[in-house]
Image 1 (tube, rainbow, N blue to C red):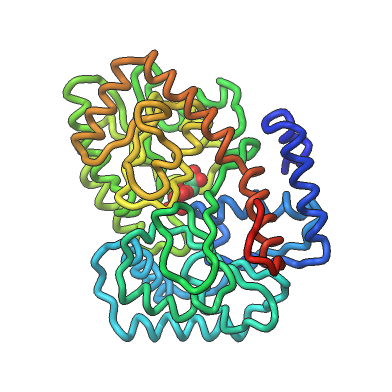
Image 2 (cartoon, rainbow, N blue to C red):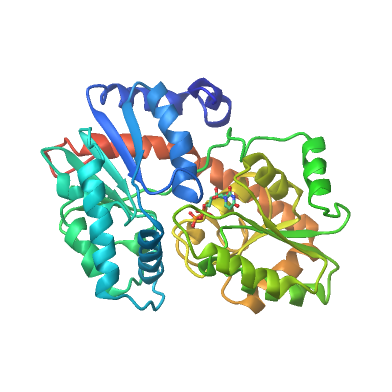
Length: 403
Ligand code: UDP
């Protein structure tokens, strides 16, 4: 695990000094992070990197994961979809399952912190245990158009929190407490993002039987309908009529996402007649994901909804040209025609992919701009600074907060 000093060449000494200053003022506080999975998906990805660094900075922090069975995670997946605006058939029985698992977690999960930081809806009900400490609800979901029934149900818990954090201004809601805008981040020194020797990239190409001499379009994502893997195949098929290229759809499953197995099967079926489509069900393997991103000519992220889209930041950090849907937190990362291309449809995605494959110099420039944009805005050090300032602000009694 990289130490804090190793970030100095990337972000500068002043950034690290500021972090240490803020951390010093939180030395007497304990922080507890709670989410619903230790691996898979963006939240686990961030916590795996952030918690050890905060520890190194002297913050007394722990990370707990709630427990839940398949039924609970089927319900929370429906909630997840509904909060993203998808029509879901949610019954009283579903709410009862959510409440029952929440009850068990409330009973069994030890809450031990001055600041309790709850990620996403799955553990939201833990706030019932509130006792003189500060509670933050961190929403990683694109709730720009949430299903009202699910939102109102969750709101019963959310309104008990001291602060709520969203990834994009578009997601803010009418709530009685302060709301904060904090975007997620990537760790430039993690196995997922660090520089790799060319031999390692070649080895991964060989392992997955990819041809390094022809263009490769890649989407790395959980097999989730909101990531639109079938739409990616359709866009690729339009591109393929003009450019001889390959498509990689690589993803794993997350412990809290039971739908992914079915989506994976759908995608495999759709791809079965084209040998240039590679559907990779990858175990959690950060080095391989890194190598695949680096081996790709263009990265696509054709999400239908997206809280932030770490995969976009990961690709841009590798100076890759990216085509991504203009949804959720993606436009924070991509300024159209400057740091990537935004799209709104399958046809739009296909058009943008062809444009990048046919103009390598333009593609290179977009990738370079994207890398600088990520360096300035979406690296872990900025994210940690925002969290520390948020924690400090919880103890500020005045209305005005100077960030
Ligand atoms: N990821 C991975 N392996 C996979 C699929 C995804 O390591 O098979 C990682 C991906 O590189 C990114 C994170 O999981 O770091 C996904 O975060 P994102 O915000 O893109 O989407 P989420 O899954 O949280 O909706």
